[in-house]
Length: 123
Length: 123
DNA sequence: TTTATTGGTTTAATTTTATAAACCATACTA
DNA sequence: TAGTATGGTTTATAAAATTAAACCAATAAA
Image (cartoon, rainbow over all chains, first blue to last red):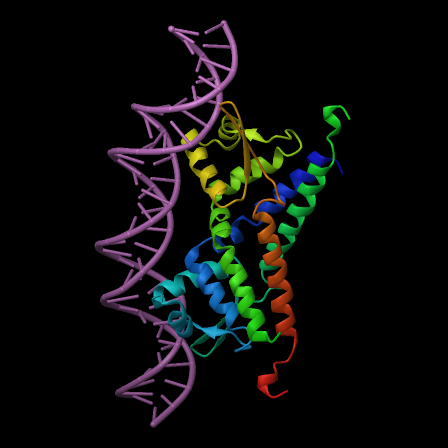
């Protein structure tokens, strides 16, 4: 595949990650993700909204609001048990995996192209 | 290393990427990054602000403002030639590489821990 | 030296976003 | 059934971000 095509494909892949990047690119939501990370070993099922409000010092509506954005961006999973909602990180099923692959590709693609002397420049 | 420590390290690594994530988590800046990607094969040195305003349909002050944020977050590189400023993606030197490594670690760490049955739960 | 080009910055207005209060719905429990 | 806990949503306000206009500085060219 030529450089142009490869870069176009990479730009498209990056575009497909826009929603996930925007969702994760907010400090408040980053705190929520950190709280979810730290709870991975504690609770298999994930943690509840009440626990998240404690750990992040955010109000419940704020947590709820940002969880919705993270859910819509498919970055976190959740399960219901009665009125209790458990939120958790699930890397493989979520778009975190999509982000991982995308960053791997940026690195591979850009470094490849920048290493090679360009043919158009007369090499 | 035990799970708790491993997760704490991951959360710290994620924290160190906060600035980069916030910078990249903006639609306008995502368009700028896409323009920079697509120009990798065209111009070795990178592209100028004027070219970016054309490609993104943003005003010059807007481009300038967002480039500054991307620069401050160490996501892009630039070089001066007289009054001309060339902006470019440099994956290895920039914090894009830091993001790549961080996402690789999220994947490795979380999936490892979620795969193993937890010892505390009586296994 | 004068003029043009390039691009960063400040400012002020608009737009967007975030938040807490109040409210609603659901599902357990006694 | 009444009471309690959980948590999502709406709304009104406050805070923050975005942008274009105007301005400024530096360099290049004529």
